[in-house]
Length: 451
Image 1 (cartoon, rainbow, N blue to C red):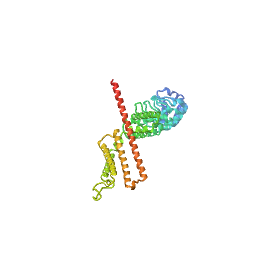
Image 2: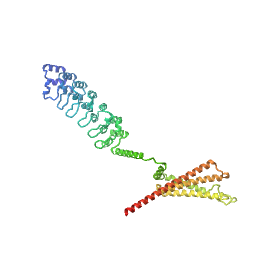
Image 3: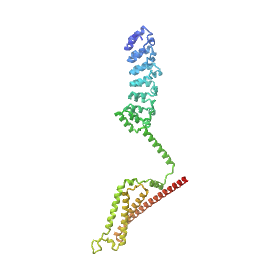
Image 4: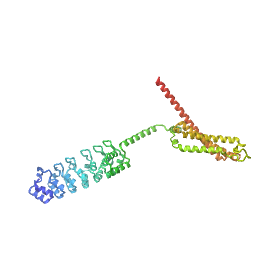
């Protein structure tokens, strides 16, 4: 390149350029024949000399597509330098293909504008050629991956408008990293928050990269700092999981789905079947947890029945003139009623003590026989307490008269207790029969195998 032309390009001296053109009309034509890699347009675009660029483009428009030693066009240089007006002038004389020309490193003018976050130039470039922002880099990345790599958040937001939400969610680089993977790796909290606002990204969460890592897994392999903790909190609040947890969760979902389908194919069970299944699955966990409370309750019942036996209704003789000292008043002329009271009270006390011994012995309450005994003993106690109460109320009333409401309530309660005992007894017998049948079948099979 002529020295005078170089100096004019360097300073942007339009007057000197015009004088050189008047002296030698071919001076710009011979630029490509010199040993200099940069053309005057490269230098003027680099320095931001707009008027100088206009003259060069008017005199020789083909300079707009000339290449320097690293295969950069003047558009590359102007985009990297942030010279918006010069970029607009170059785009007027360049073809659409020229806008996407790549240098020796595979970088376009848009790439360099993003790298330096020249937002105005990015807008001009994508307005001129919208598909430029959707082109893939040589390594399979998009311009959005470049934004994250250089932490250019504003450029990232601007270029995201070229893609749909579904495309943003499924966009990956050559290593299978999504945009969220890269944002987490580079600890870009702003970018992570922006991406989590996209419903499609939240829906398609837990995507694994080429190494089988989700976003949380990537953070686990990164140095821990405040940004890492903040991003991890954001991801966990959005229900993101690690790869192993996501696989387990997916397995559970598939298992539940298949189970639901199987249940739909089955006929709905009747009431008796549901009750039977409940009885079989009732393993006494509740009784085990409440063992202490049950012990206290049986002690209270046993103590009360013991006290009632020593202090029967009507009291005892305290005066020898009335009868033998210490004897129950009801023994005089009411021996049968007193005997009935003593028998019922004794049964209540003995059954309470039986329950107490079972609970204190440490026998596992998951045993069906143990549950059956406890249920029958409890029902018997409740039944006899009710009968005793009703009998004593009748004995204390004139002509053994009992209020109808009281009688009906006590009778209904006693019938309910009998029904409860009957149901548990039937279920227990069925359970025993099934156990015996299974044992018999196993024995028969063993004999057949032995033969």
